[in-house]
Structure formats: C-alpha cells, structure tokens
Length: 246
Ligand code: NAD
Figure (spheres, rainbow, N blue to C red):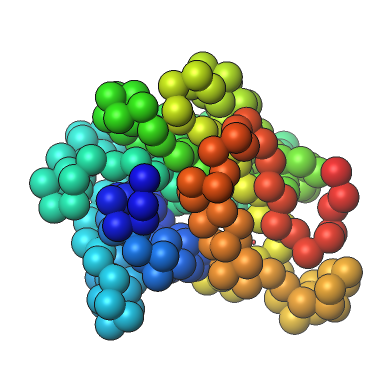
C-alpha cells in the first residue's frame, strides 16, 4: 500500500505530540483526520499540513464518548475514505497523591486514556479486517514502565494501554493488522508545561541533556505506521533519550 492510499486518524492531534505525529504522517503523503476536543487546535494543525501541501481534516471529538467517536468516524470515512492507520494519542494527566485521590479522578483518567483507546480502536477494526491491513499505534507512557509518584491513576491507565496493545497484537497477528505502542519519556509539550515540572531543570538530568521534542515521538510512530514495519507487532518502541534502558 503506497502512502497516497493511506488514511490516518490521530487523536489529540490539536497540539503537542499528536500535532507532530499528524504533521509527519501528512508529510509522508498520508491523508490525516485530526481528532481533538479542541477544535481550534485541530484546525491549526490542518492549516499547517495544508500549507505544506498535505491533506487533512479537523474534527471535534471526545474520545471518552462513544457517540462522538462514531459520528467522527463516519465523517472521516466520508471525507477521506477507510482508515488504515490509527494513532491513539489523546490523553490526560494529573498529579494527585494516592491517599486523597478521588474515585471521580480515577474514573476520568481510566475513561479517557484506557476506555477511550478501546472505543476508538473498536470503531476502526472492522474496516482494517476487511482490508486485511492496518496499523494501530498507541501512545503509552514511560510512567507505566517505571512507576510515577502521585500518578497511580495515570500509570494504571497507561499500563492498561500496554496490555491492550499486546492482546490486540496477538489477536490480529494473522490478519494484517499490527498493534504497537510508543512510551514517550519526558517530552516538551503544552501538557508538561502546564504541570508542576520545570522543563529546563529536568532536561539537565537527561542523558542527552535535553527534553524530548514532539517530532522525536512522531518519527517513531511514522516508522510503526509504515509498510516497512509489517513484521513488527506487539512491541514497545520507547522514545526517552536513553533515560530508561529496558
Ligand atoms: P497535550 O495535552 O499537549 O495534548 C493532548 C491533546 O489531546 C490535546 O490537544 C487535548 O485537547 C487532546 N485531548 C485530551 N482529552 C481528549 C479527549 N477526551 N478527546 C479528544 N481529545 C482529547 O499532551 P501531549 O504531551 O502531547 O501528550 C500526548 C500523549 O502522550 C498523551 O497520551 C500523554 O499521556 C502521552 N505522554 C506524554 C508525555 C510527555 O512528556 N509530554 C510523556 C508520556 C506520555
């Protein structure tokens, strides 16, 4: 399958890592649907892609809501055709000490990061099975590999994404669909800038003395989305600048 026949959905493509993934895929000739709660952000990504000669559409979607997903999926098919690359990138985070973590906070994290990934993936699996071809790439987190204080809900949600990835990889291995995950380490995005962390200070503690950039993650995703990655499934492609070696 050549890139000009490919259609991708990138959730959370309105900023940060998702925006970089959408931009890199579009630069390779993939038509991209940018799904985001933040329509203005999604529009912004589309504008950048079109200025560079690519094809993209922006859709306002809440991945925690099945109806919203179904409507956006139908619109994506109408505008761009059947989807063969799915990047489950949208996610939320929070820092909350475990002893006082509320059930609402727990449920919200699992609903967006884990159930959202399940619902969006289920929406597209039938057409990938029909085509006998598909690439599913889930953005997990190094927090699920190493643990992270005050992030039990987040780490659990991303650990769930890793198990989900492996289970689907085995279920679809002989169906032409690969399923892999990319755990970013510390990547300089609006999400991180909004948190309590001093990006420049943490960067000095990295082996490479810099934070990751969204494009670092995007190029790893583009590889997993490519025809060349056909024999790679169920795998972890960590993008953390050598911070964690496993
Ligand atoms: P970000 O907050 O900068 O961007 C996330 C995007 O997802 C936003 O545009 C937001 O509007 C969208 N989004 C959030 N909830 C949504 C929902 N319910 N429906 C649709 N869209 C929604 O975040 P980022 O740093 O670019 O992170 C992207 C992914 O990478 C997330 O899954 C995050 O957990 C993961 N990650 C990031 C880092 C990092 O250091 N930045 C590290 C590990 C994992």
